[in-house]
Amino acid sequence: MAPNKGGIALQSMPTEARTFELRKKDLDHPALRLDKMRAAIPKEAFVKSVGWSLFHMAFDYGMWMASLYCIIQFNNSDYYATAPEWQKWAATLAFWNVSGFFMWGIFVVGHDCGHGTFSKNKLFNDIIGHICHASLMVPFYPWALSHRRHHMYHNHVDKDYSHPWYTPDKLEKPEFGLARMMEKAPWLRATFPFYGWAVYLWGMPDGSHFVPMSFTGAENNRLWNESKELTQGYSDHINCIISSSTVFAAAAAILHMCDWNWNTFAYYYLASALVYGWWLVTVTYLQHHDHSTEVFDDKDWNFVYSAFETIDRKFGFGLDYLHHHITDGHIAHHLFFTSIPHYNLPIATQAIYEYMAKNGLGHMVKRDQVSAPSPSLSISPSGVNLTPISPSLPLSLSLLRCLCASF
Image (tube, rainbow, N blue to C red; front, side, top):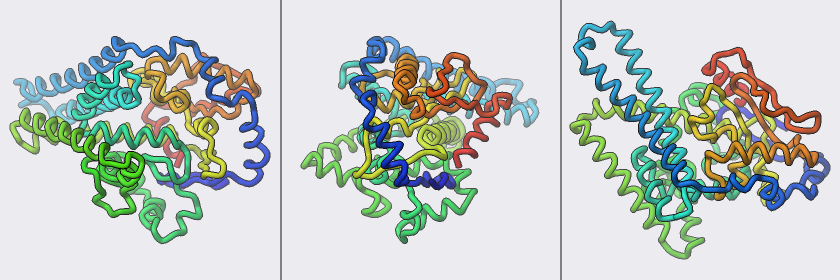
């Protein structure tokens, strides 16, 4: 099996041996069933609490606004005029990183709304989802639409959404020249996390999330082509216009608060948004890519089996809690994406690990640890395989090493 190459999700299709021996054995296992896994998870994991959801939303917005308040106070203080340049830059970089991180947290809260796990009420979920995502310049309905298709077909070589899968045979085809260029250009892979999210929302590769059409050619418009075919109408297209209107309204409001000064807007909002985009692209990449990751086609794709191609990565240092367990509970999230809110993912994750190990399927669970190892779970020899990555390194260096290993 060929390893991943570059940041373009180069994958191998299952080898013949794996398809007919190892994989068939796992697929035929009576324990590899969604209903049995659900029964093994405590019922409280499926409880959707509006109170807890609103708490996490308020906390993230509170931290974003607090960081904004601090930098405004510093920039307008008497001390600022005489402060050394390094202190001004240090304060600015701290603001951009803190505010960007909690903007990423707000996105994850809106992500719960898109899955219907923020509350039991769809209208309330849609309202909160629009509030969260409009403040981040993300059209809620189109994003929820494409993201749901990603979950419905995770690791399907053609039907998966959000990030394209490239097998060696695909890269040989003329139409994948852009992918080949990224594979051969390290500078593109290094910078892509900062602007990749904007590229995706504007139309590549699934279609524009702002208008129900593609700016980059008909080959990048499957989101709307499939919607028209599935609904036999334009309801999704209308929803797109509604969501985009809330984004433009939010953008106008933020610009108004910046006195319509683009430099002010770039300093207090856009730079932080680039940081949040970096977190979103980086985390998404690490959730779905590893040297052992495989993708499947119509002949051998299976929802439950493919969910175990996602990877639980524990960052440590409180980050897993702060970005709502979207990293260390991703397997459980993909298995039950419409049922389990983010704050209950640790309960479900632990139960799934124990269930898989108990039934001799622990080898299917992919876990990784970016920071120091946690003693909370140790299942062997046929259970979960947990290999810490450089626990002695600072988080920034160990995360970088994890990214380089995935590449």
